[in-house]
Image 1: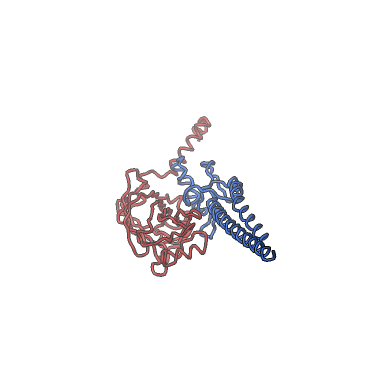
Image 2: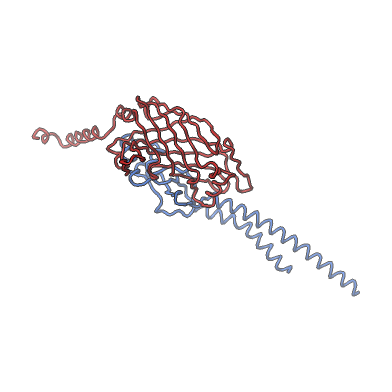
Length: 153
Length: 222
């Protein structure tokens, strides 16, 4: 029992610590995209033709050719490259097509970071509880053994 | 023909390009003309209708969308003023997670059963000096409560030559952005640990309206 508690406490403490380097490693995989709810082909063509009548270098106008912006540029994980649009009008823009209307919700780095924080805190508290219980039981067992020896003597 | 063929090739190309540009571009005067005394119908086609909303939360930045709206906007005889209203169904708001959409529809949030529509009514809309940006004042009604706000909208009368690929009628494109403070509309956001959600929704509107009335029997839609 004591051994199990000790292993559990060490395991929980390990998880509480190791999630942070794991997050650091995952952060390296995250890329920043401007998510858009894509427009259909006819709308994109219409917007392109309207853009040609009144061209501009404004990123907001250019991304609007391809769809409606979903907030500000956001860091996403595990993005499908096939979903990324680099507009010919401004190739440095990286638009991520997200069909919210079809229940799509790509993973944001922010979500993983929050999950990491919760996991670390949860595992840390678990480690403390297990270690406290381990110490308490160990002391009680020690006191019991000493009492038995004293009674026998 | 002989005279044209005797032109230097570069000059001939330039001439053709100029002629094409003149033929295809819509001069500003024509754009204003196109908006005169029209009634534009919105929400006639999901693909020509996008309203987005963004809310910052602990877990993630919530992005949502709806393609289900209906409404009309009328321009006056000068084509420089407009009135009308648009409404969006609460039940059709999509955030990418079905369970979250369900919460959004619940009585604690937008209460879709009791208040199925979010309504926006133009109080005034006046064309700006640049002929592209309009200043407007509107009343927005959410969960039975109405708030007035002002904003700017980019309105483009789409030349018929281009707009015909969108469907029947003459088309106009409307883009605008504004913020909505949910607590002003009686929405109480639960602030649980790790589930904090911003009180502000940032709304983005991209709508294409057509003069073809979808209710008319002969109004074939593209």
